[in-house]
Image (tube, rainbow, N blue to C red; front, top):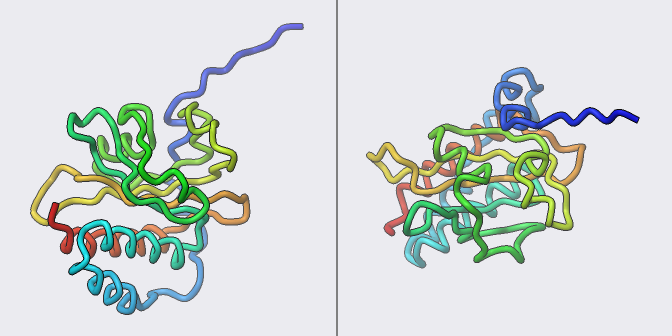
Length: 184
């Protein structure tokens, strides 16, 4: 029996271009003012609190299974999972190699990216007990900077939820707002 082995390429799991062709979800534009106020209210409690409030807003508004914030480590070789909410919350404080992760790819591209079943390419993601069907990752910049400080990400764990351009808009606006409040 001849088995054909097909090597998967990164381009096979990056599907950002599909966002333009997916149906919009819900009634938009959605008023994000309550979320902005809640995130701003956390500013006096520190960066972690701001980023956690942002990820919780992403989790609720994008109706995804997990959301988090990852930032570059001290040597820019790893990504620290500083905030993780939802199904994967227990992984908060973990890390991954920058050059072997959807977050690192997003930082290198310096633009939002959508991934479909990313564990097919990023093998370490298979170790989780929950499948990631889609991941939407948005870079976070300090105001006035070009290079991303980190990323806000959202993951789906079921086939029913597919990210839309509206989810990207929500995440981009919340991420930009959070960036104006963090100090470290």
